[in-house]
Image (cartoon, rainbow, N blue to C red; front, top):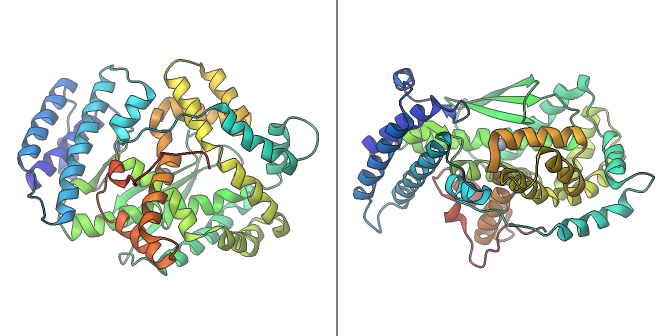
Length: 412
Ligand SMILES: [Zn+2]
């Protein structure tokens, strides 16, 4: 399997020659990257098909090391996704759901707009005043913007809190660290670029004002116990301890992304369940941002409801990718059902233009990870962290997270 895994890494690098977003991280031998030349897509696909045949012949015997069995299934599925991405680069058109199934091993549920309207109706009495609900929500939220001059101090405080909390439950490799950069002109709000050797570069996009909740969200999602911890644990347990080369590369448009985004978003809640979070926001984050801590409770009551509108973003993206609505209508949908302010709705449509069905990885991914972990740990916080850490250290596929009676990502 080592030889086959190495071929897989080189194929991912070859696809990266056609698609600048594809290779999200690579910290394997530099000469492999240097040797990657732009080869015809059909040739890459034929190599991938041959590699899949060889992999099928190399299936580990049943009842052996469970991590080896996961490795084999994972490599096979990652290669299937690679072939889909190659076909898309060659002009193949897939529907939103076909694409998410092929690339991320999952399909997001469809919703009736009425489900979102019920949540919007619950927000009405929480946001009194004149104007539409979106205008009232936007005005309300504007009072919780972190002043630019306080951004760095606020993020630093959030990162320290997330790291301290994570270290109480997860043994991190010695020497792990990351740097934070503030950037502009991106379609995303934050990004973790894993660099290997237990180091990440985290970028925060300052194109639009950054609200109070984003400090802890980004610190947990991009850092601890999210992407930085996930990548560091994969490097420690699979690359260094096991010597498996395929985990030195991360193709963005692949099932790994659902696990990455789902664990990063679930990581916010596992590190700071609602009561803990409110305490931290009041005592640390709001003061660091120069915001009045007495507003924190109301802010999180509103944001808790708004989060339930996140699936409206998947529905808007599906309609838009499937050509049923245009960019202007997708923007309007996000404003109406997702309560996106106009500039944020436009940024989101740009994100969908670039990443398409990737959007499901955040909310469906989080819900799938939550159900998987909670079905195994119940309410015991220590057990929850243990199952979470194990998931971060193993090559489990999204379809392998399925829980009996799983109804997919319901609006809840
Ligand atoms: Zn992420």
